[in-house]
Each structure stands twice: as C-alpha cells, then as structure tokens.
Amino acid sequence: MFMTGNHKDNLTRRRALAVTGGTVAAGGLAVAGYQSAFADTTAEAETTAASASATSTSSSCMTLMTSVTEGPYYLDGALVRKDITEGKSGVPLTLRLTVVDATDGCTPVSGAAVEIWHCDAWGYYSGYTTANPGGSAPAESEDGSTADDNTYLRGYQIANANGVVKFETIFPGWYTPRTCHIHVRVHTGGEKADGTYEGGKVNYTGQFFFDDDIAAEIFTLEPYSKHSGSYTKLADDMVYDGGGASSGLLTLKAVHKADPSKGYKGFLTLGVDPDAESTGAGSGGGGTPPGDAPTGAPPSDAPSATTSESATSSTTAS
Image (cartoon, rainbow, N blue to C red):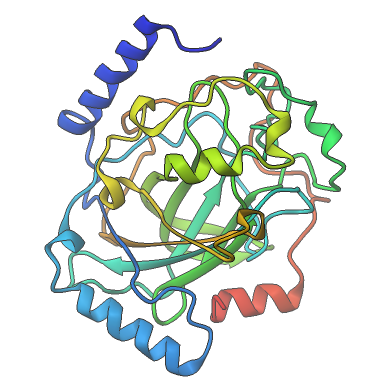
C-alpha cells in the first residue's frame, strides 16, 4: 500500500521521535565523509591513513548518532566476502567504509567486522523473496541471476589495519514505504569461522542512505525501471532523520559522470565505541516480512566465498 497523507504525517512524527527521543546505542555511531576513499596503492593507502587521523580533530567524528532499527529482513550467517552480488543485476556500487574508535581520538578499529544487507533492484531481499516490494515489480526469480535465495546482497568484511572495508555490490532498489537504503552492523570481538563471522558483540546497528537525485536517475535505468510505483524520498522516509552524513547519507562519486550505468563509489567513516553493545531495536521501522519467511542461518550448502577472495578481503579490504 502506498503512503496516504495521514500515513506520511505519521512517518514525520516517527522521524521526530527518532531525532529527539530515539534510543542512542551505548557509545553510538559517528559518521563523516571519508576524504581519501578507494586508495588502492601503497602511497594512496598512506594518504588514507593520514586523512583518517586528521578526522580525529573534527567535532563531527565524536557526534553520537541515534541507533536505528535493523528492520525485518535480517538473517544470521552472512558470508565474509567482498563481492556480495551473486549475479544480481544492477548499477555497480563499490562501498569503502572506515571504522574508527570515537572514544579514542578516532583511531582505526582494526579487525572490526562490518556487515551489510540490502534489497535487489526490484526491492526483494534474499531469504524474504515472497515479500511484495509494492508498486508493480517482476517476480524476483525473473532477473535471471544464479543467486542463492538466502544469501544474495548480504555479507561481512573485516577491517584492515587502517579500519577500512570494501564491498562490491549493486545500487539498491526500493520497496514501499522505504527510501533507498542499505542496512549495516558493526561487530567487534568475534572471529571468522566456517565462512561467516561468529561471536563478539554488535556495536552499532544502522542504515546508509542515498541522494534523491542520484537514486531517481538510477531508477530510470534497467533493471530498476521495471519496478514502477511511488518511490519514497529521503524527506518522507520513516528512518532517515535529515542529518546528512551524520545520519548515514553516503558520499557518492560516479565512475563515469556522463553514464550513471557505469556505477558509483560510496564512502563514509563510521565512528563507534568498541565497548558499546547495540540491540538493533532503535527507532524507525522497515516494513513487515511475510509470515512464511525463513529465519536463522542460511542452509549448509549455501555458496561460500573463494579462498583467495576471503584472504584478500579479510586482510587488505582492497
């Protein structure tokens, strides 16, 4: 069902609650633009580390952010891997995220596990493919991918010595009544085991968001354009509170300015309290999954990351 005027008013009130009365995770999350994203050479990596250090003098690094809901589409057992697409089609998106300790001068949090999950180009989540994304969308199975139903567009990366992780994915689609977004958790204290990440604790649960103009342009392209209906903009979203980068708004850079189909790079710095623990029960909402949706870990025969990819992504996040 699409938003009515009354529903939109309700969402506005919910956003106000998120800003003024939402639960702040113990230690919270600070977010700032990462000035030297996507450095792949040693020299650039050194510049990246220097930029991260310089960020420690910025007051924005220490700003606490309200924890937001993990939403109804979470699944345990995501794989440790850099490329989470599993053949899902869409505009390429490279995410480069830096985890720093907001309680210790924004020093890099080496070994932190960053977990993300998001919907495909038509609004479907792996593991919940019977959930209607709203509007008029093709069936999830029509995209021609070879993706496993319980694992696509989900994954972990382990931060390197500079606190950096990198994901290769696609630009998310949308589903009613949410704006375009990516879910994120930051974990510390656990370890990689059996292709996933186990133990430790969740320091932060939140979401990343996308500029309306860029999203609107992306959604005119294939395969996104096959999903028709009313897309929710940032100002009308039930979770995003309008705070820009401090509220999870990604900084995006087009790979080719004249051709958005070539993809985007997105970056953000995440300042966490490694001693904090987030319940994932923050403010905002995210829809209701179908009653027959699976829960728990993916099946034992789910695809695993290759040895070379796992080794590279876990140690260098390149």
